[in-house]
Image 1 (tube, rainbow, N blue to C red):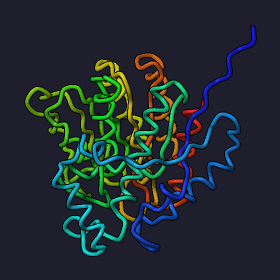
Image 2: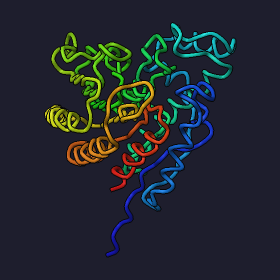
Image 3: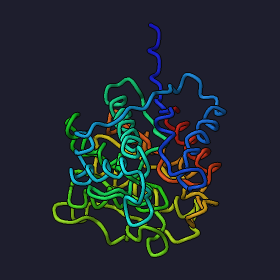
Image 4: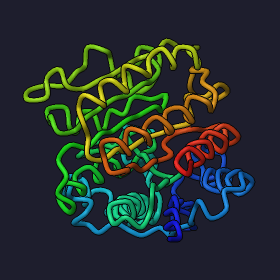
Length: 318
């Protein structure tokens, strides 16, 4: 009997996704999308990957995580087309509501692709906007696609135990505080110590509250930490996840943790991202019916993000 063809890894690509950014010359510029896709095209993955198109999120989908007042606020600022959505990090511009909704919708499309079994895994490069809270923008993040995806997995797909794993240099505060008292959100975050880097949160002592007290994992690393320190910390993440037994894994793999990023101080190589992705795929196969997606997150050195995210997709394909 002929062997069944292997399902592809969906990789999301398109102008609707590329246009999320804050202008040429901004650290989060629209060129990040193409920088990644040029590198990925050189990786020679062939039929192991399949390009998929972005889609927009509906207001009802945004409201799974975000407050109605905040959604209305972004809509108004999008029409006004000027000012800031927060205290000064995240500019408003004409159409920002629709552009940010495309990021969220594309992450939800990745979830659906994996949950339907059409895709083995899925990766969304311009996504992982982990600083936006339920009621506010922050740190270049308008809507929190990961937060919406967690609620979407529960609301549409009936899952309860979802793992969110974050290796971005910045702490995933929007996700952490959005689910700080939620025991079903399994949270593990390796990041640069918040005493030295925005957003100033994610101390090792922050382990959840209420019903989730002691059930979240934050691992801050000192400035200058590299692959050695990552490799020392990573087994704690894997042990924590294995014990928690998630049903689905979301990896936020920001590349600003690599050496040479212009706004952070960690010194990982892309090998850290490759290891994280490979190990999480193994765990997904063991415990989650293979269900994992990756989101690009931060990363402001274009060469770094292109290499790191390509290594993640390679690990997903292998």
